[in-house]
Image 1 (tube, rainbow, N blue to C red):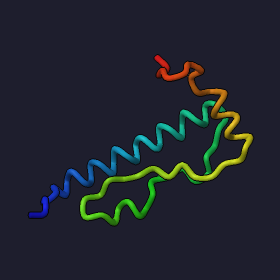
Image 2: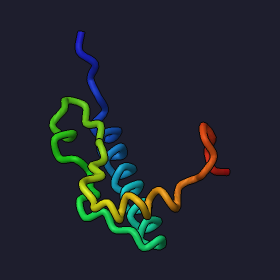
Image 3: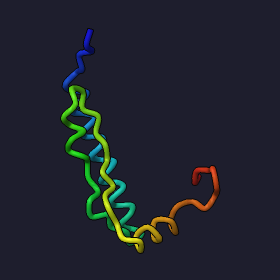
Image 4: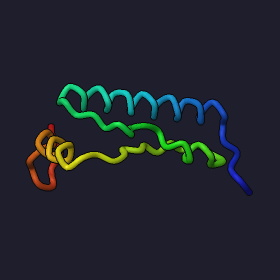
Length: 80
């Protein structure tokens, strides 16, 4: 039997995903980093129960270096 999803849950899930993408975009911009293709991936809306995926997109090698520079340096750890 197929699981019936609450339409409100789907809307909330998409809104939360959009908010997360906007927060990531803002945080990256504070570090001088722009990912031009950063967005919610449209095909992820096509599922019976939408589960948004984030498209980080392509970037130059210089942007990769900038991202590496601002990420935590600890191996296997999470920045605290």
